[in-house]
Image 1 (spheres, helix red, strand yellow):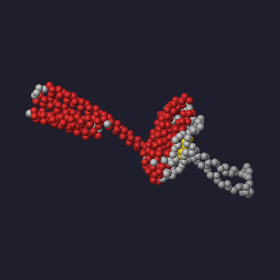
Image 2 (cartoon, helix red, strand yellow; image 1 turned 30 degrees about the vertical axis):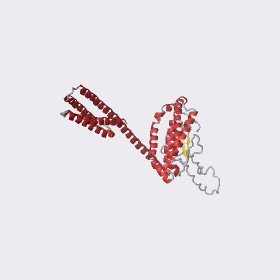
Image 3 (cartoon, helix red, strand yellow; image 1 turned 135 degrees about the vertical axis):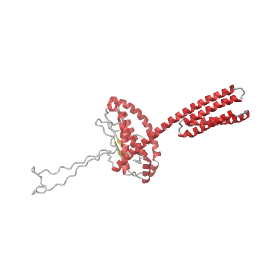
Image 4 (cartoon, one colour; image 1 turned 120 degrees about the horizontal axis):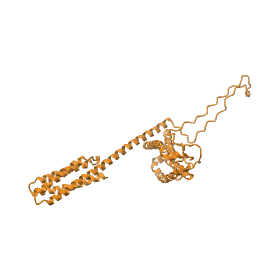
Length: 398
């Protein structure tokens, strides 16, 4: 773990060993190979949530994370970055199962220090803009992941622009994780890379001395001063990432793909929620309509039992029961069913109309023999009708 310093916030530095060649066999099975790491990372993240919550309260009081909390969260950030770097095809070396990773080609420099208590209190709100940006670019990389995987698998190497763009995505994600984990006060920046470090100007060659002066003579006070001594070029900071134009365009592409994925996902969720509400409403209306029909069927049975042994009395009850089936069919056609249930609802409405038609035919016959024949057909049709109602309710409940 880096030293805990009290200076200004320093953005976490991501150092990735630049090796563009990739083993095709490792790339081909990268998704399977990274799964054990994902399982371990999930468990570590669960513990990290508890540590972070406790650390948040402690940071509000102390103005910094307690050293054990800072150590764990720093190690967790580094471990997460190594797993993602391996999954992003930035390295072929398998990440070690542990926090110690000396010599691993992906390193993260973290130096947790003092924290502004007000910034800690509102850290979640402050992180919203960078959370959106990080989410978009990471999701955009994920949308392009299959094409990237196929390209690296075929070429056996990661193109330079893609290597730098992916490193920029991973670095920004790491800085976001570090900021939300309270191991840095530096707000995530530089998604599109860093500015190049300026180099010292070249020292011009020394001109000839004054006329008549011997070669190598030391100029006196009257002699104009010579050129300044050569300046030492400033040293590039560790983890400096300068993106080419192609790499920046790829980062923009990832952002666009992430935005499109978000829009598509939002539209899908809205459509799904709308269909869910429509399905629930249709199921409720269907059950209510069937309940009304079932109640009318009970009244029919009571009317038939109360009738004397006269065909005309039973036929009067048949007409009323036929009206109930016609009302059910009308109500069924009024209900707005989801597309998946419309065919079943239409078939059920047709069965209700057939039941009403058969009941009206029964009410118009003149002899008990004809009535008994039609009654047998009605019983079979009624059984099919009940089964269809059950099937339609089940389909709306799935």
